[in-house]
Image (cartoon, rainbow, N blue to C red; front, side, top):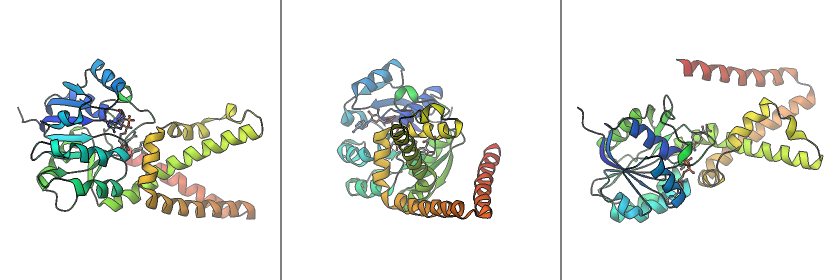
Amino acid sequence: MTDPLFGTLCVIGPGLIGSSVLRRLRAHPELVSHLVVADRDPGVLERVRDLDLGDIVTDDLSAAVRDADCVMLCVPVGAIAPIAEAIMPHLKPGAILTDVGSTRRSVVDALTPHLRGDIAYVPAHPMAGTEHSGPDAGFATLFEDRWCLLTPAPDVPARAIDRIAAFWSAMGARIRVMDVDHHDTICAMVSHLPHLIAFTICGTADTLAEDMRSEVLDFAASGFRDFTRIAASDPTMWRDIFLNNSDALLSVLDRFSQDASAMAQAIRDGDEKTIVDTISRGRRIRRSLLENRQA
Ligand SMILES: NC(=O)c1ccc[n+]([C@@H]2O[C@H](COP(=O)([O-])OP(=O)(O)OC[C@H]3O[C@@H](n4cnc5c(N)ncnc54)[C@H](O)[C@@H]3O)[C@@H](O)[C@H]2O)c1
Ligand SMILES: O=C(O)C(=O)C[C@]1(C(=O)O)C=C[C@@H](O)C=C1
């Protein structure tokens, strides 16, 4: 029998992501021997107990981390650094600290000054999720064949990075190690901007429906519905993402606005070539994504 990856793992914030990790660990008990789960919300803790996702379930974060070989923060981005600061004095010597936050630079900058010398911090962002939140939303296969982006500082010991990489491989994910700012630029484009557009387009349709006193939304077919899926995501999580990745997000939003204006101009001018070229590009991207997924 192989040794477990961690003797004790503590998950703080057993929502969609945290509870998916815990479900996978329950399905593969050889990976981690002992699971400690902490949250500030009594309702969440009750569900975690009902679902039997932890061996110890508590609202006492300091006590929860005391014996943990690895502590994983699965809370909204704005709560990561404050929680890390609060638990820092209570961490076991030599423990690994990790999180699953969707943005990196502002979190790393806020957290690093509080980092103890004997604690390795290895942020890991799984590029997987749904529009749902909370412990009931998770599922054990969420991370299968999805990327997990690791952004450790250059001085983090390789042993700790390897552990977290092995952990996410066991979750079914593919691993890529990258620089913090590079991570934020990529995620601004492929995740944060699409969500911003989805939230905005729903608002526009809703306002139009009110203005016209009409049933615009009643006739929403699948194109609009595809936007509403991601627009149903958690407001606190997305507020934190937008505010914590503002520079990269505003920069891609600027480019998007220019491209949308160019499309508007092409429509105004009856410029068929530009319109067809732009649509064809989208079609090519969709097809190459589907091919890569099947590969
Ligand atoms: N949802 C996604 O699609 C997705 C994908 C990848 C990464 N992420 C990131 O993962 C993290 C968690 O997202 P989620 O969708 O699982 O969220 P969630 O809302 O489902 O769960 C978050 C949990 O954190 C708890 N929490 C919040 N503040 C806390 C605090 N101060 N102290 C203790 N507990 C606290 C909440 O009670 C909740 O149980 C976020 O940083 C998010 O950016 C989300
Ligand atoms: O599929 C979804 O619903 C998601 O929103 C998942 C998604 C994404 O944008 O792809 C959302 C935020 C994350 O940090 C990573 C993944």
